[in-house]
Image 1 (cartoon, each protein chain N blue to C red):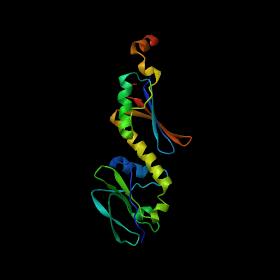
Image 2: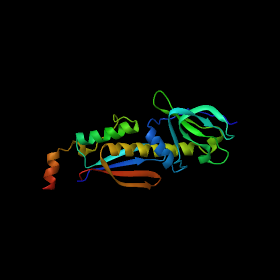
Image 3: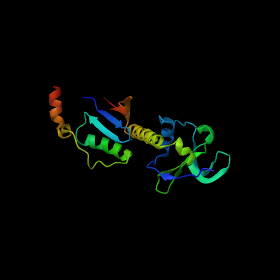
Image 4: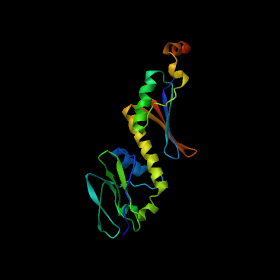
Length: 63
Length: 138
């Protein structure tokens, strides 16, 4: 699955970041970079369920 | 003479602020001066004002009977916008919000470049700017 990052900047200049296809620490590293750039904290970030999905399970699905 | 009314912004990245000034959908200023040492602003009569700025949009690029507008870098790294009372009519809340949006997009794009991401699309959807990147190698 392609790893895609979607940035949404609303009418009031609020920024949100959504990641697709990322798992575990790879997700954290990417989002922390964007949060830092936006001057925001990742403390309140809600992780998608797939964040905690083991990579091995994903590989199995592809077979 | 129109008084300058400085106000501190959240902008702290000079490169992104210059880009945002050029990309702001409300008013675009692509001809911008950038100075390491702050320089004096000039009023609409051609008079040198006591206010100084590192990033300056000269009045000839603003048009009409405008004064220069500028952004002065503070010790905390944040830029203070220096806009005269007269020019607040043109550089109002809508302008500043547009500048914030453009600045946010420039800041995100800079971070995407740092992470080696590839731009996939950049669109306005229902008034929101939606930018998609792909991680290299996909």
